[in-house]
Length: 389
Picture 1: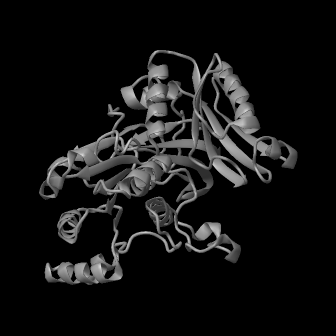
Picture 2 (picture 1 turned 180 degrees about the horizontal axis):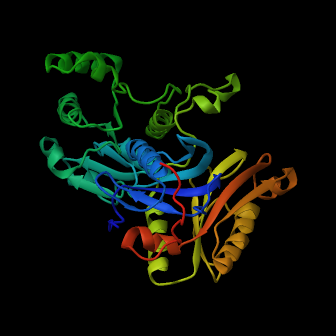
Picture 3 (picture 1 turned 90 degrees about the horizontal axis):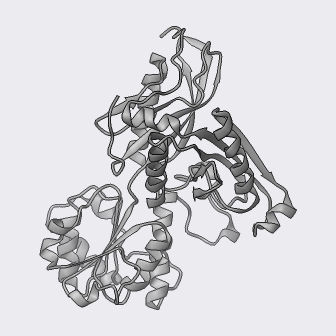
């Protein structure tokens, strides 16, 4: 059994349904990080396939529900949720001018941890950008010394001059970030592209940059430009056509991801679940594994429920959350995982502020198993019959 730090990238695989097995694995978990794994799923074929799925989610950060099966016995099947518990994605704004204020607010609204960097201290102060989580002031020569650029970073370059823009681009492009955007006119973008080619960057990498940044919505004011950039950030991480929805859009199956994106609250919920498990505090975790129609939260949303009714997180509020909360109390009392489906007809949906009805499928489990995968505590009973490989 491994011991993980709860502020690192963790993927947890949980069995939520099964067919053809001689032992009950529902609720059983295994946790993975890039260099480590812990817990146990007992069946060798399941261990192997779970590790493969966890690797994909570690790379993408996207919540998944997948079906796995024994390659030599097709009647043995399990359904698992593969959940990322990651630190939040970071929006790094290089330049603290007039666009940074509304852009920081938009980034915060989208769930990013927002950092603003500028060489003028007054432009990164709380008074200037109150929505930023962090303000850093230094020369743009030293951004790599103050900032960590990773695949979870989206970088927007809005400095006050061509020289600083190019300087920042040359540094950021050396790192495997999720998104790089730069504000500028068509002429300025052309000049920057020429400079990047002269510095030896290949055409494919240059073409991957979002220059000029943002979707074409006719934005003029700093606030409108920030909305344009925020919309492009969503498009880049979710997929979409970027056109008016009245003309239709991509089918759901063609989008990049329709599940919840990891947020800081996810790590907080995980910390509280592990603490409750280790302190023997009765609690249950409710996770949306599927959503249909109009629902406030999507697959991957989580809520921790305590025996006294307190909650941490939300799966959407209103009727659906109330019903899942009541079911979670039963799970705490019975100490058994449960699947629960909440359907909302038009009247109930209207009461919850939605245009039309929808449904969510929620997997609810006691939190005690988290102690097993993180600290080597007791977990579910091992299978007596492991079966074939």
